[in-house]
Structure formats: structure tokens, C-alpha cells
Length: 273
Image: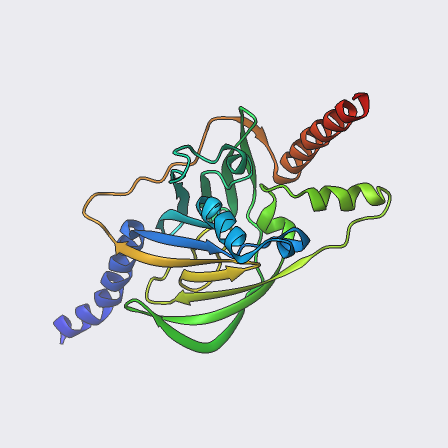
């Protein structure tokens, strides 16, 4: 009787201890393939199908990328796997100015640390993670060996693209400086798996009750192609440390100010001819 009583007392404790140890040691590595649709706008309407194909081939290293996500229960690191332009044999330096840098997320501390390089200067962007208001659905599908469930959210475009730059955004701000620009919301659809119980995901996406294996926003889809849980070689996740510290909003201002200077300089040269 005493033996049964002792088991009933200590068994829940051992389960809790085992669960705690597993959560402390739980880690993984996922490979994501990113594919973006090419948008040529009015300029593209003037191109022949052959010319469009040539442009798509030329921009392939921008439209198709591979990323690595390493993660544990609390932290993650999201890195781009560098690709070489098969045509020119050189990296895409212009596109590199506005690419996502090495990204560290800590979902427990709600912290983002991201390394960005802009025109030879390194910045260390430190900010809070944007909390996405996910709406969970009942729709499910298989991705590899994992059962995934659909979730949807509306996210401000600036939260997804703050490291990027668009001349159109700049022109909108110049049109009426006193008028506050209208917030653009982006529809985000994600597929997560509770079989991997971490609130992590690629890029700016996180906060679901399971690892995000696929996510689509704007014209880009990120899909997990490989995954490894608790690999033999221990994964070490360390936040970037080098660069001038700044916030997301301040970094956006720095980039836009530089691009305005470049635009005005070019326009001044044209007028002087």
C-alpha cells in the first residue's frame, strides 16, 4: 500500500521533471525555400515573353532563396544560404543592400536582434518582436511527415518589409509630408504543426502553437523542405553582436534618407548637363 502511495506521489513529479529536461534540450534545424513571383508592372507589359523569361532568369537569385532556421523552445536564428548568380558569377550586391540580415528571435523575452549592412556600414537592429494576432482554423494538410493546421493574420506591411526599400514608398511619403501614410495590411497564411511544439517560424513569423512549416505573404511563399529534430551535434544559437545599435523605425529612416540623397544627387547631375 505504501509503495502504491509513493508511486502516486512521485510519478507526476518525474513526468514534470522529464518534461522540463526535454524542453531545455529540445532543438532543431529546418531548411526553407523561398519563392517570390516576379512583378514587372507597367514596364513588364511592354516586354515579349522571351524578354520576360530573360529577366526572370537574371533575377532568379532574388526570387528563389534558401534559408536555415535553427531553434529551441525559446530562441531561433534565421540565416540566408548565400547563392551565387549563375550567369554573372557574382553576388547580387544591389539586392543585398535590402535583403534580410541574420535574424535572432527570442519569443520568451519578445526580443528581435537583426544584423543589417547598408552601403558598407553594419547596423545591429534591436527591437521588440511584432506580436501577430493569429486566427486559428480547422483546415489541415500534410507537409512531409507532419500534420499542419492553417492560421491567418493581417500584418502591417512595414512590419514585414522594414529592412527593405521601395521607391514607391518614398514617393508616397514625398507627396504629402504632413499627411500620415495609410497603414497597409498584408494577408498572411501560415501552416504550423503541433508535432513540433515551439512557437518559432521563419522570417518575421512566430507565435503559433507549433513550428510554422509554410507561410505565404504578399508575393512570397516560404516552405520547409528539410527538418531535423535534436541532431547529434548540439546547436548553438547566439544573437548577432556587431554593428551600430538602432531600432527598426530608425533604420528605415536612415535608409530612406540615404536613398533620397542619392536620388537628389542624380537629378542634380542631370539638370547640370
